[in-house]
Length: 154
Image (cartoon, one colour):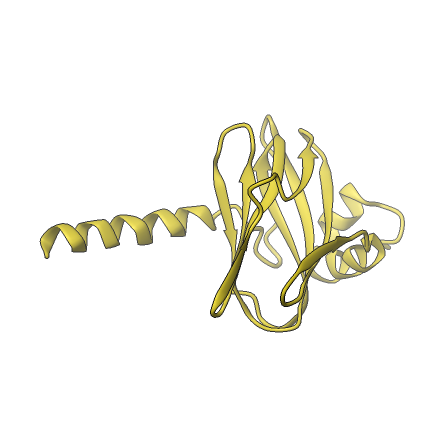
């Protein structure tokens, strides 16, 4: 019993640390050396438990979630490297992308846009809807939008 409690506590703390890189609304963080911003729009027809983004070079995982129904932008402050959507967890089912999933290389000092992940049962697909991301980004983080995107963020 005691060992089970310790394991559960460790798992909860580990999952909390995986979410710490998500930029909170109104609080853009300055970039440090070897960091960049990863932008993603999620278009879900139902609520999702989490989406996992994995650094293919280090294996580190970052969770976004829970995610409510609708279209949302997410901006993460991460170490430069290649990142892929590796898993989508919905209520009652999940998709694993063991073949690399949807990927983008995050450059140091830059904002890189992964795309708009449309989550549908039984599939998900990635669209390039940068105009929508820019609009949501300007609404949520006008300072970051102006600095890293510029045109269209006025």
